[in-house]
Amino acid sequence: MEKRDELYRGKAKSVYTTDDADRLVLLFRNDTSAFDGKKVEQLDRKGMVNNKFNAFIMQKLEEAGVPTQFDALLSDNECLVKKLKMIPVECVVRNFAAGSLVRRLGLEEGLELKPSTFELFLKDDALGDPFINESHVQAFGWATPEQLARMKELSLKVNQVLSQLFDAAGLLLVDFKLEFGVFHGDIVLGDEFSPDGCRLWDKETRKKMDKDRFRQGLGDVIESYEEVAKRIGVVL
Ligand code: TMP
Ligand code: ASP
Image 1: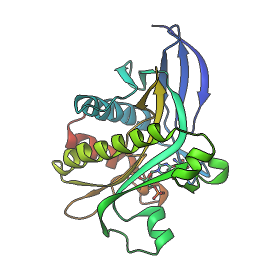
Image 2: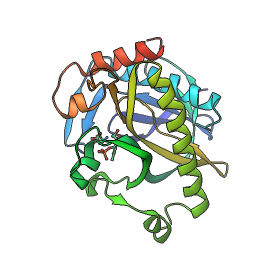
Image 3: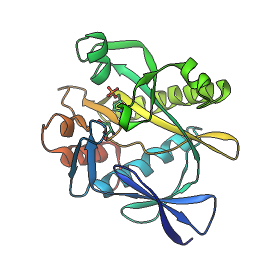
Image 4: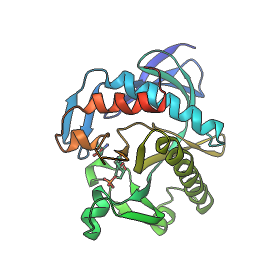
């Protein structure tokens, strides 16, 4: 496999074409952004940590029957993935209230949600990733009803698998965001799963171990990502 041209530069990752029309290379950079790209900093080791974290999680999800775009780790900061046609809708599952849900509904952070909630957001930084519902997805043709049903089914499966995995490491999976795409007609999990796109709290102390440390200026951002990685068994 040969890495070719930069196809797309996101806030934290760059995407490259390869000599295989069905495969891309994802490069995880040290750039860390929040608030739809309004706060950006470089954090040492972040690209490496998130690349290896993502590879570990995607492999666990594949083993549990969730189709993912992940193929192989290529280097500290790069992995090989299937080229998906991305659906511009972010799927968020929540087990405890935090972040925008707390702001929207005026809740106390940490309230347990039973059953877990499933929400949709439009992936559009300029609009601030607005909250949307199923009818918007249909009206604007972002996904078919069948595709959306599959995205929801896979999101809840991911929640089941990863809640258990993090629980065994003394961590609460508070919430997370997933992005899906289409590969040869099937819905496949794309993008990444790392502490950048989820909330993880220590079960005993409720200490925040995810990107909220960056958003809220709490410090020790990458040290916390590394601690989570160590607890679940990611080799860095
Ligand atoms: P929220 O509380 O800001 O809506 O975010 C819910 C979860 O989804 C949280 O773990 C952060 C993640 N998320 C992203 O990673 N990127 C996004 O653009 C959005 C809207 C959420
Ligand atoms: N990932 C988004 C951004 O970089 C949202 C966030 O994580 O706050 O702005």
